[in-house]
Length: 260
Picture 1 (spheres, rainbow, N blue to C red):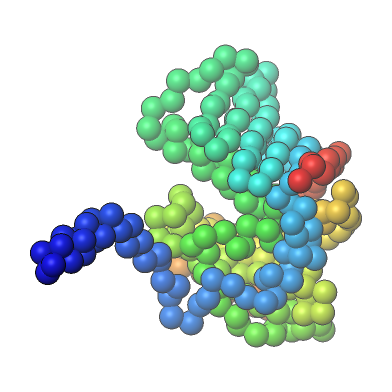
Picture 2 (cartoon, rainbow, N blue to C red):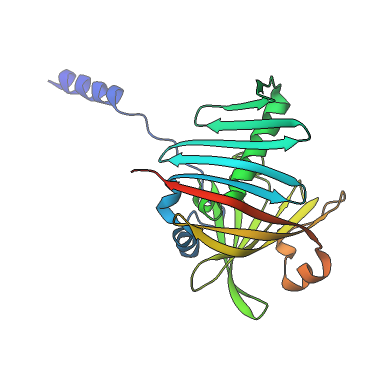
């Protein structure tokens, strides 16, 4: 009988599911979720982001590109078309792969070129749908309380990322929200190991197809010596140190809500 019991125990252990590896732990002082961020996502469109097709043009002083973005639950497809002179390049990214064509012909890319193409798509899609991306896995939030800007309090949140989770995981971001409505008002980020700093103030809000869109004034500074950090951003620092780099506009916005 003991042999039968022992055999049954060993068989049960062999058939048991392997223990799931623990996920990454949020750094001290941060959390995966914050109420103000959850409210902001809801205010800007909430679940509508997850079942929609959005087409628009993003224009700034450096040029423009067209976006056709479809998200349907876990499935997504992003198409970005950018023109440089007479050459039109198209980036098509979905759950499976990234394809790039130029002049209608597929591009053969080596490793570094593939990385740059992935970065090109990720950066543009990240900024386009803020604050929706702020609850992505590996995104850690630190509540920094209220801070006064131009006579009004804004709720300040610092965001960092799981190391290695993306090509920009070494950057830090700060977002400022209206404490009453939770609308995203402005944000800043550093990059390239402290050699670049950007600060965007949002304007011209409009709700289209249930989603909240906005344009932005983009301030910035670059230095080869490093030392630029998003933690230095204050109203005085922006006024005295950061020149206006460009104005970013979202034009010809079309939103189609998909059946759930």
